[in-house]
Length: 270
Ligand SMILES: [Zn+2]
Image 1: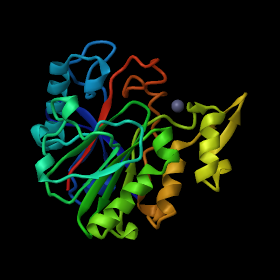
Image 2 (image 1 turned 90 degrees about the vertical axis):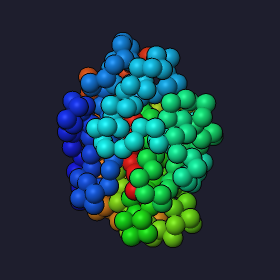
Image 3 (image 1 turned 90 degrees about the horizontal axis):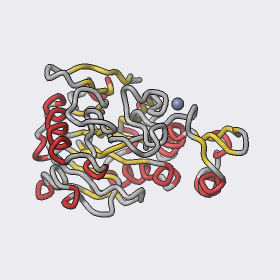
């Protein structure tokens, strides 16, 4: 069972790692908002280009974060992120797509997988759930962007199944890290969400708690459940248990900051 811990790099960037990934030498990280160039409301390590922030500041921030993690910023592959459930396999030819320009990111996609060593996959988040996946046996990695739509559409599960199809990944070999995102303490949802949840999750009642006229949804458990369902061992899934809405001094929160905020990045390479 791994842990999530924050550390500071030599270039003064604070970011989080999963100890289970680090033990395998997998270069990865989840950024915080600390130590970057952006000004309010994107202060300061905003990595999202589609936020209204200054593109030059974002590129400087991405370089800082990539240096901290030890990956090449100009090789980073990113996706458009449309709250869908499409998974794309990334190859050498995709290196650098979306690294500097949002319009070059892989279109219509919310999850990326690759078996190319050293090719960094990066997605961006402010409350949505980052799911990082490592298959140390077939040697492949994946990353998913799971907001409520992605979570109820089981994008994390689809990502592992895409790895199984493309790389012969056995879900039983996978290690997963579920990163900082809005927690069950803060994530109130309405009937629209609950109705979709009911369709895809037999255990939906275990994932919600009634709260005034609404429900509170546990996105972390919904993602853990869909991974267990296909055979990812429970003890290889690390849920970091850090709520972005409760911790806006360290992370960006779309909900707690009324949409005027930046994005953290989650990055992983084989
Ligand atoms: Zn919270």
